[in-house]
Image 1 (cartoon, one colour):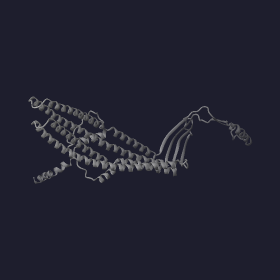
Image 2 (cartoon, rainbow, N blue to C red):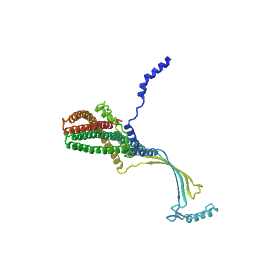
Image 3 (cartoon, rainbow, N blue to C red):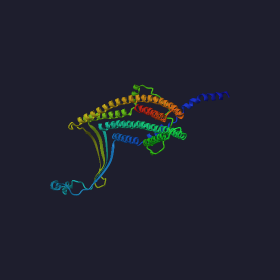
Length: 457
């Protein structure tokens, strides 16, 4: 019993830690980001580009292997030039004389003159050829170039992925903000409708004139127009989000209404630290570095071509002759070859210079992008600070406007305030709420922008 009790107490002590160790469920926004990464058409195109460059790398790798070819040919010919040589007319008399002098028939005297078509008729060459490059700078450096280009293409895909994360995040925030704006307008419309009913009672009791009802109804009609515009913005924001997710534009969007109200942790790193994080993580730099390595490899390729030859071995084995008899037609040929361009009108020197210029361009671009990334981090950091400060100010403004409206509403109901004062307080409260809603969304967007420029997921 004591052992069981001790075991249960141990489990109870571990239970909070076990709960904390459970993976947290993904938020709706995270699910939409993952859905966009799976379905987005622009990202899918980049994935296909990566696959295309991967196949180019496979093709470059294939050049390191021997090439084996089965190459049968069969020729038929008629007419054309002929090879004519009077071998019979020349040798038959000589051989006849030799036979007479030797008293034998050792020498043939019936040789025919040669009269053959230069284009062979009923001739075949059935062979298997093998070729293998012992040393070829083009093959070696081309493989390295394709490998660097693949690295650059994969980095480009990650750039598009980072941009897509940001676009989906901001699109979802904008959709939530339109819902919040509609809620604010509907609440304000309810307040104004109550004002219309109150004014109608005042007119019925001869406490006020008819114009107060008309003025209140006019404010309701203005608010209806603003509400219609907000509903249009909601549909537009929903369609844009669905476009990024590559699904039907009218698909309903799940709402996490607590997302805009949840506090965001402030950045704990300094601007300088965030700059270094961005320079280490931004895939734009990885893309340029891959292209730069490819350009530097191209320089070595052209320099090697200008100085070194290509060496290869090969051979043929098969059958060759007139008619497909394969009797006494077998043959084999072995080859060892060398190719060396000694002079091509300074073309190689120009190619080397061209490759160096390209590498210098990429190096300059890399330096420029590094500076741009530093600037983006500084701007995003201080824009986030300003947005947070603006958010605090708008929250204070909503509180002040709400208190003012309550006071004016009480005074108006007791006949101590004019309708224009009530309408002004109501409009100020509506404006403060919309401003505070936009400010909350702006903080989220600015934080997403900071995460984008620092390549934080």
